[in-house]
View 1 (cartoon, rainbow, N blue to C red):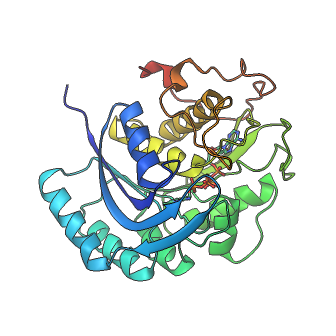
View 2 (tube, protein in one colour):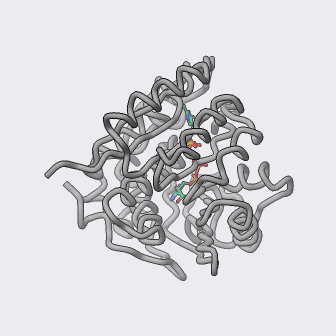
Length: 299
Ligand SMILES: Nc1ncnc2c1ncn2[C@@H]1O[C@H](COP(=O)(O)OP(=O)(O)O)[C@@H](O)[C@H]1O
Ligand SMILES: Cc1ncc(COP(=O)(O)OP(=O)(O)O)c(N)n1
């Protein structure tokens, strides 16, 4: 069967844990045909982002036009955009109807602290998003206030949804269920995200996986949402699937030793990494919206 085409518009991570490389791995793992528009090249490993080189906006437009003429996507995700000119180029394509089922992951700063984007660029694209997936820090930067506990995450999701995207997931991979920063190696109450559907906010909770190999969780999450939208899921189901997928990909990589910093997820061995069976990351689902489980399409 011909797979649906899914496009990622993002930066290159030379270490392949995040960015274009992670997105394409997620697409392959979930059975869709991935295409890519490169917005920037980073010199990056598991420890740091050493250099960033932006692709000119005209070249981003050329990639978008060339691809969408021949391989029109069924769903699209954006990651690192770099500057506002690149965001304008992508927004132009969205306005022209070339980027259906658009998932915007507002990448601003890497885990290691490097700046990968600006709020102004994100703001230009958010009105065209079907789904936006900011983490707590990104939501805070866009809204201009702190977003700490789950109540504030829910409120931030509601506020961002009122300003453009139909659905917003504020992710909290770095906090436990009661909103305390984790930071250590212990499992707390769960990795909690807040999904605003436009009418309500649902808290999605899966086990928090204690691992250093967590580089690229945000990229992988948004890529999985886009893949599942292309396969026909409704947004809440796509989001629930993506959360489960990331949990399993984190579990799959717990024993990996790739690089000396924050290593990548195991994007491919997720279908046999059952959450709850993974050491201290016991199941703590509550209040979550669950779609069909990842194992339904696992290889
Ligand atoms: N250690 C972890 N254990 C379980 N889930 C996690 C962990 N880290 C991140 N996640 C999940 O991964 C997804 C991406 O979130 P997050 O890591 O907050 O994004 P970002 O990489 O943009 O900071 C969310 O569903 C989040 O809950
Ligand atoms: C090229 C590139 N794009 C995005 C990121 C950040 O990835 P993300 O998944 O949002 O973040 P972490 O999970 O690594 O915090 C990146 N580093 N490089």
